[in-house]
Length: 143
Length: 143
Length: 143
Length: 143
Image (cartoon, rainbow over all chains, first blue to last red; front, side):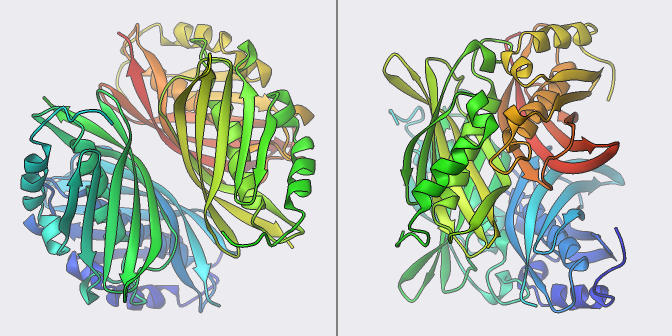
């Protein structure tokens, strides 16, 4: 990874994150903002469970998608925004414990498309379990 | 599609849906329950938007995943439950309007694995826009 | 699907297909060329099997990818070419019989990206078995 | 990764690979066989190109699928075989040069399903280019 094309990417991402109703609804927080790598966490509350009490796959997906989207955002030119083209998630284990932590990373950054990968872990009493892995594509819009 | 292997699949699915905290958080409702086909809708409220005001991809994904999961559930033996193995979603258009409607369908049903497909539409003033399409795999557990 | 943006799309696709070494290696043939829909078939010879004698998943994938790529090509402007961005295939059944037939279709056509879907069937003694389903993204290049 | 459940996994994989007509057709060779990790290479000959002279995506996919399948095989019990459930590939760059090299790795190994990941590089004059990345699911059969 070379220099950021937008030196203000962190401020842009933090401001954008704050505007996402969905992240607030899920009580998600932005833990780390690096060039090409973003970490987002969200608590496993009863409100985000499936029928069996584990976290709904939609929680892992939602914070994973946002982490990957902002990872793509961090390598783009200033003034451009990002949209999900497609995302695939493989579920590896049930999500149980206190919270989920999703990391998004840039695999390859082109002018228009950014290929991203991500991983989601569940944290339970200090132990981390790898519960999902993600591979997808983001597109730069505007600019 | 032949006869349901679980004649009570509809009651089972409705009861399971009611236990999903995530569906309640998203104000999702179960619109149609057929053998091999499920429809779930959720309103586009400010709480489920992304930074630009459209519905977060996680909303389409969450109700799409549930619609596909219950479609798989509807073709399973009684006493078995369903988990998402993997799901891929392609986003086709921004989600704007009053609500999203997700349909999940069974593509092929094996003893253990069920391949599912789905589509998500946004409804705005009586017009429907195809915003996402899904292809994935569910697994039967228990039983 | 509206009017083709390139009225000569069929000639362009047939000429492009003829230049694909891979399609020749697999003895693939272009069965149908329509605006937004392409059908390609390939024989199941011993040369394209896996360790158990069924057709290798790579055969279904290769003709499926080409069918989807040309389906995307058929809706593009003249002078543009197509590349696979990503493709997901779900295998539904073993590929056995005389040949595989892959159909590629356009799901949504944007200016740059085209979302495509496809299905692969195996033909054995007049019977067709659905062996794979595809969802992916193509990108227009050049132009 | 713990101990192999099948101490003879390498012999089993080499023997299975030798029976794959598709690998022979593509002139693919098995470069590395480790517990949980397989490397397969194939030359970029005119016979495996697309219309523009680069390697066909089907070549990357075919050796990637086999590398991932055998990576899954390497962690299974003796007497079991492996089938592809689904595979997603993101193409990162055109495949040009002398050969493609695909690595398959086990992400998570369950009793029935094995989640795998892979990467394909093109080698050209001593330089390696990352041309594709893979995420998928394999299933154990028989046994």
